Image (cartoon, rainbow, N blue to C red; front, side, top):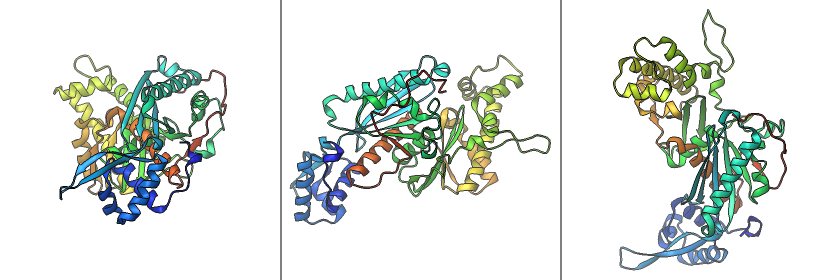
Length: 403
């Protein structure tokens, strides 16, 4: 059922659909109890939603009094969504129902990585989406929306300013291939959204997600929603000028140039004094976990630097919870030192490592697409930065590197 054919739902029907989408399969009596709806109202609601195919009975459950109660879930007309994470080395696509039920997962490698053109990446994104749709098959009646996470600032004010380099350019093929709204979102914001709904920050009203890897980024959740700022650039923590010293001039994006894993390895290799230095951040951490003394020194130094960054973020946002993610940040080996240094510099705040790993961004993108789709069905205003309609050309020339 396309969005245009969904009639305006009654308030009671909207309430029920929202609960079914958020809770998963649930009995009719339980729905009535949660929403304080009478039996006649519940009968009318289930008839309305059932006729539209938005909910459907999937079985029954024995109640405490011995009576059998029908169990309802989202129906086929509720449709499904796809989240896509456009990374440096791969494109991940995940298809889910609006209630988070898994349908398909696809991962395609980006062969040239840093040298790949916009056109080449656009082709891989399109291929990943098509593969996910094919894998869903008959289990998904309607594709409601696609959310795409990109490693760029995403802003309505920037939309279309530079068609050769803009984030929406990577979707040029996809917009011709699918008949569904396409959401653009920053990748770190998506990772934060994933933590909010599926990770260690589930149910939290306010927290920050600090990504530490090759790059530095911050996802900010306030009032249970992503805070994007005036230009869509809130959380671009890597752009903080650094260092601050009487003898040095702060440079643009200095904190990222210092805290990023590439810079860490440059310092580590230059200062390594014993045997052969590690060739990558992963090897450095592996050797530290095995107890190699010099590796431990370098890892603890880096953890202390991250702890200082965390302390600054706590002072700015008072978030109650800081979630550490990214290739380096999510490593639990640094957690205690980050907590220790942060605690010495600011007030006590919960700090936790992400449990979603490399899938955090695509999980967040998928949940973002689901929230958009549900809000649209309910007749509400969706929370989204940039929504691109399908079947619109963005440009057809091979473009410079997206990385």
